[in-house]
Length: 302
Image (cartoon, rainbow, N blue to C red; front, side, top):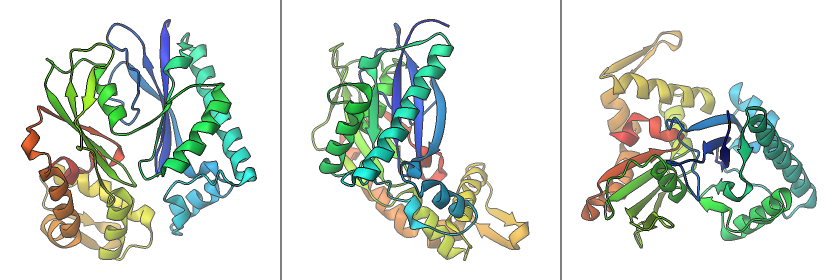
């Protein structure tokens, strides 16, 4: 394999993902989203737990999987004001960066440093983003505006596949993650240097996302852990999207009924999600594009 590739790093609430995008005739993005890997020109290199940035990250994730709920797994925060934490984060991120470059070079790709982009959680403050940018610049030796926010990054990423037909079309981007569901409307332009533009005032956030749904499922079905709730969430999504009305959990000796799940467990969330989307009706978007892990959840798409 030969050719240049751009690297994308997505730092989310649950996981951090690293991927690449080949730079060619159909792929000339200035910004990358690496929340969706359906594009044949891209590929996931690896994914790992975001809280590995801290010394307690691995233990927290292990406890989470073992059913010992630990809130530290949520709300991915790097305490960069603390010098020790800063150095840990720096060493970790450098290892990730060097490792990704090495993997791609082994496959015959040359990483285009100018096309490296990092996507940070939308829940971060401007101050947190500033500290993060400083850390990244130290690691890769420069760079300006390399931290971009989802879902704008997702829009440019999808554009690399040239799925849009003409200037003036609008796309609603729904980036559904663990921490937040972020939405944005973009308009296609005929400017090759700036192929999309944000529709002013269209960026919205719903703070009740994946981790909120996990907690609701845990409470409603009296489960032992959030890990168990997350697993049930995706089983529910798979079964109900296939048209099933009831799921039997034999090992737990209980049932999940679709009507009960939606009307009682998810009622509040569904209403808020609908209110979020209703704000875009007046724009009449030509496309709806999904990104983020929670986009696989059937209620997000339905």
